[in-house]
Length: 520
Length: 71
Image (cartoon, rainbow over all chains, first blue to last red; front, side, top):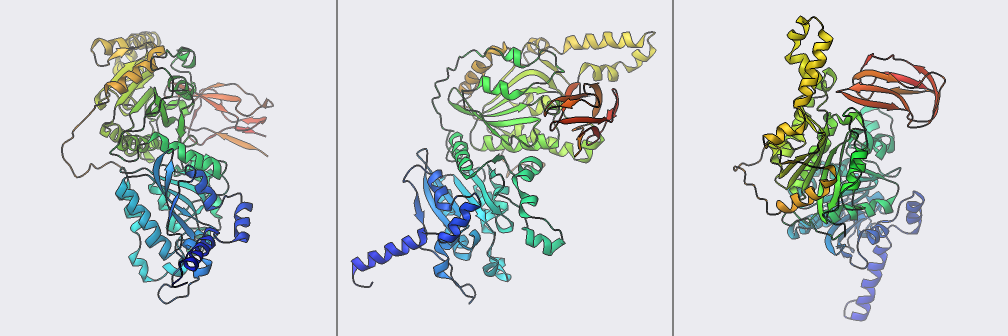
């Protein structure tokens, strides 16, 4: 070393090689035995070939507050950071290395390396991806009142929210110190079996409350992708997870100042969609799988469903319409009849806001019997949750296309972007039913006294229902020009594509405010 | 092992399509609820034999109420 470049460069090479070797062969073997890839194998999958640029490779643990440190045993301080290209576009990454001190967040890794990535991703307005496989905060460095100087990570994420896309890929444990990363991210895929997230890990839970539970039982994908809704999509392994991250990013712009990327899919804009009348039964009582409609209408093989296993009575996801990225919000009659409840409203509201933040047009495929009513849902706060979806739809200023396929009832019609919510195109299929409530319910309220006074109440009731049923067809609304058109279902794709192009220069200016007060 | 099939939401029992002793496959329809004027099929979460049907047609059921027991 010292005055000889040859020796100096050879020293550099050996330092690099040592840190590129991560936590060593034994720990790498253990990582593989758990069914997980190493952090560097994951980065190879995430980025286009040979595009990863690493920052902070030579970092390692530092003594904190006079404590001991192990510079040789902590390559890169347990987190690999930098940037690379995903389908040719720059993306930043913070990837925890479980083979180094269980991927725990140390002072160097967190306060310098991860912070640097957050700073630069935001400076350049590029997406940020976390590959999470971490035991959480490195307690030996974090315990004590110097904790007072931490927490910037989440505040940074809030500043980034709606500015750059944030993805938290769950590839291992993620508790306490790291669990709010997915909580604040735009997209959270979870690997089945190996990933988990919880505000407190199993050992902390035992100490704090006495509960005996494992990290997996408490916070695996079977909890978060099915019950809590914190996770988005359950995947079978690391490879599928990272492929899904790349796919998610392909629909979004690098930041909120850009348009979503256009991809020529070759699927003709004017393609007539045959068979929708077979998929959607004429009887308004009968269920069907709305995903079949989505797959038929949008560009072939572009449907990317998000949160497919939680709040299944509403379907959300990204797709392409003649190459344009779109966010689809569709009622799902096959699940709970497509009736909206608290979780469905919550799921849709968050997705709508993400699309609006990142300039992705929204397509609403409406077939909604309304919001669920009754004492159980009131206790769950359905008014508060339903209001989130109202809020999100009203607030969104991206192009909004509404197709009323069948039912459009009550506040369900509003939250699915009815007339009052500034749709750029609002059309109905010929058998659509639009009303404040179904004819049966309406008759009971409006004509209750007449029916009771009638000699033959049942016949009177049936006649009144039939009379009201005639009023709910879409031609009354079309006659008032409250909807733009009634269309043949086969024209649905053409109407959506033309609508998005019609609204390409859309600009809506709202009154100045600091921010609204969404009923979270 | 028995499996309890519960109502996903409040509604009334519109039509019962399975009967005790029936062999059912996963996803087979056991009964149909009606809620908000929609027919909502209740299906078998896994293959098995219908051990017991705890409701009758026109019954009003609550979310979480056990409708059918499979074995």
